[in-house]
Length: 269
Image (tube, rainbow, N blue to C red; front, side, top):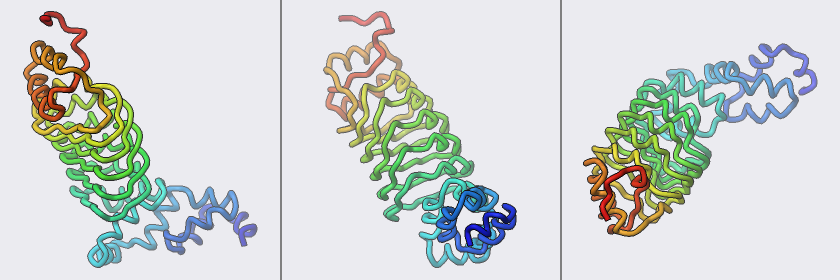
């Protein structure tokens, strides 16, 4: 069968396999190179989803099985999830999938969600990195990825989320230094970084977080220094940094060091 299908035009091959359920079709991509090239393409994904995820059946499935949406998006390869996102999720404003036992990584297609205001994926088994494309979801107000298995650094693209008020990343395996771009989040009120594996100190750009009211970073791996360093910084930085210093003093009981004082003059001993 695989050898005969290998001689068919790509369009015919796609038409044949489009009649197979999306949950099963990808195993056939291993039959030969021609079939693999035909089935691992967004044009085929669009055709396949047209057969199996019709609007009327989709609406009924969501009503009877809300987990259907989450699992379909997360389990499919990128070329499927991109098409799926553009067709069914592009106008969604809230995604709140907690305790769904979702695995795999966050789809790159999350960046297509231009109307999304709340993304709450807490308490799942999500792994991999936070995608850079998430920075394209510029309507986000609340982002909660806490209690997962995410790793790697916080992407600098999150600094583009100008409307973001809540950033909850606690209890993951995130690493690296905090990107300076997070200081661009002028609306940010809550930031939780607790129980991760970060390195270094807070970037000076955090002085611009004038709306920050609740900051938690205990057991995050962030470097802490003496209480004297914290007190000296409070004398020379802006009101925003003084406010942040007060939050940090509560969080770390005066043991946190903030990077950046070496570029400022007028520090009294």
